Image 1 (cartoon, rainbow, N blue to C red):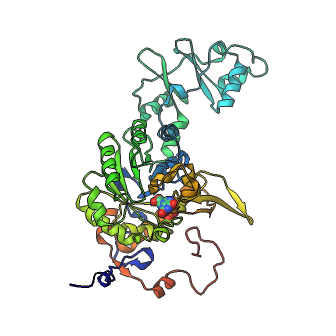
Image 2: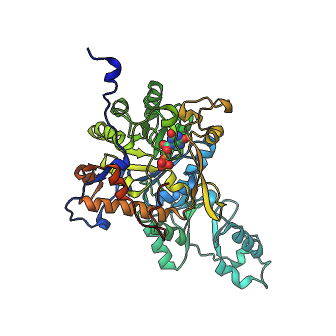
Image 3: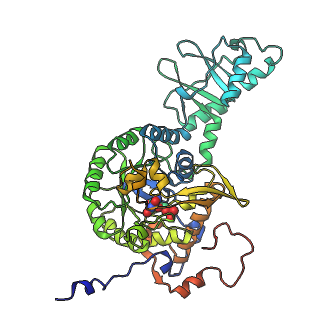
Length: 492
Ligand code: XMP
């Protein structure tokens, strides 16, 4: 028999992004023709294969709205109460709603003065309001155009005098097309929606319809609402149920090491009680994938690749990300379960390499933490602008409630053994411009391999192994960079 310790040294090699490159192949595909639509989980499609990380310096409702409008998916972090989470999910779900619901419609009363209503509309930021009586029946509609002749001389007149009393209304099942036709036929900009008893149920505005049109590529559920993902702790049944009830499309069981019997059992139970898809993670090996593919709607991969992550140095455990994704994808693809590569992506090239290794979508934290839509304010140091970015296993983040991702007790600061750091990241401007570079680079990668779609690319792409000399060759070298590129900053 062989010696137990020295056989331990016969180790398999595991690779990460910088170790490999895509082998260029004959191509009939122009990069801008490449179709990057994909699946994040068995029942949820996206138009771009990109997710934002469930971190408290990355994804809250503003960033989630921007992600979904651009075709991807924001995953809400869980360093907030269940009540706060529900408000955030509702904000995303309502962002692009065709019908503004009754509670959110600014209305006027017939006996108010023109001046009062003018001030109210200014304060609420709307340019018109339905006029309703005590029973919420629509008597008229008042807009800036109706008010203008009354300013100065007729300011104390009643609204019933100034309003337009021939109101065009529609029923609750109105479509965008029908609403537009009504607006066109009657040269109006807003249509109150009424229920069966003629009471105000909502409002459709021209501005709202045009806004929806601007985001043709948005990731939407069947009802037209933007998609959103929500991170849920492995044992947080109440958060899971609340997120599901609020309309979340995908729940992400959020655990640093999901290959754990209690975590898997609990995730399985959650998946049986909710309507939303349930993605389980993080894992990094084929054995872990085997343990979850039977019930999971998606599997998320990443043990220690993250930019702010110290799991590998603190615990000595981890899996280089390309190998981790490939192992999990071998198992998951046999069960037709989508795979998400989470963490370690610095460039668009890394993202498309993760797809070549078998991922259906990628999740990024640091890449988006510097955008305008990410939580937190801009800070200036030495004349340069930054935003905060911290690991969810950092002391700061665990102190605000995230410790159980790392299966750690929360009650004692001193006792934390962190697996992440707190950092600053350069301020970058809008999410849309970051996504434009990221997805543009991924499409170009598909062009080099000659693949027109993500499934074709996964099938067709091949890696070559890169030496450290090859890595150096791959970055700008022997020059001094004089102008910043929008998609490249030198590694420290
Ligand atoms: P990037 O590289 O995109 O990685 O910034 C984001 C992913 O990193 C994971 N994450 C952590 N991992 N300690 C860790 O070991 C941490 O404190 C930590 N916080 C986040 C997470 O999977 C995220 O999506």
